[in-house]
Amino acid sequence: MNVITLLDGDLMTKRVVIITVLVLIVIIGIAIYAWSLYPQQVGKRVLRVGTSPDFPPFEYIDEKTGEVIGIDIDLIKALAKKLGCEVQIVQMDFDGLIPALLNKQIDVIASGMTITEERAQKVAFTIPYWRADQAILVRKDSPFAPRDLDDLVGKTVAVQSGTTAQFLLEDYINKTGNKINIKAYPSYVLAVQDLENGNVDAVLVDSPVASMFEKARNVKITGIVVTNENYGLAVRKEDRELLDKLNNALKEFLNSTEWQAILQKYLGG
Image 1 (tube, one colour):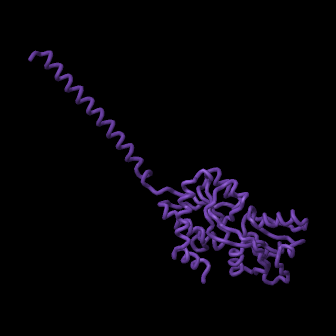
Image 2: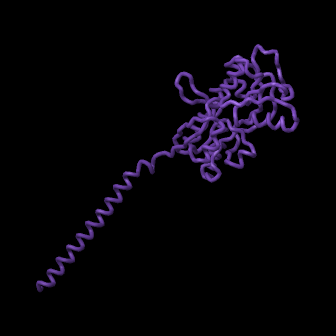
Image 3: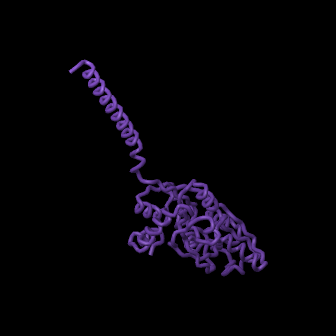
């Protein structure tokens, strides 16, 4: 064996060692980087849920804890659990929910939102999970007892801004030419408060919510306007995968004892 061959062998060995070390360094670096991302990869997705917590029993503030509770909140948390997601509740005014969804500030709307053709042009709704009509509220001591929209002509009627109650009154005015003074509020809590204070003649609100106000406030239901509204959760139109998952979970959940327990919890018998 000559010296040159020996040197070539040593050089080759050194090159193999160097290359092996470099490969190991790269592999270790990739592993460390992947490990740093690992909690985000396996962690549950956070669903940012937009709601307007002034719509009992669907969403409202618990006076004891200050947390948002209600039928919609328990529902979306149960569905998110089935999807392997965490829930982050984002509070805002009702008429800001769809803009916030479209601007990707939230991922889902769970806020007693009626499925309408106009809204469905902007967002995608799940299958319905609730049906409601519109109810007329007046003060308990008021002699005024309207039973339908015709009885509200010439009166001041409070609604929450951006709701189907507001759209119903506006449509009625446009079709009949009759005058009703619509007073829109950012929340139904403020609308009912103004009714109690004598600043408006009536409040038009979804029937199950009217029933809750009737139990808790100095107001009463005098009439029901049948509208056959359906509530749905809303997502962005492009979020088809999320919509499909929510629908599949909803179909199963609405037939469960857990759903009945939620209704019992907030509505009683």
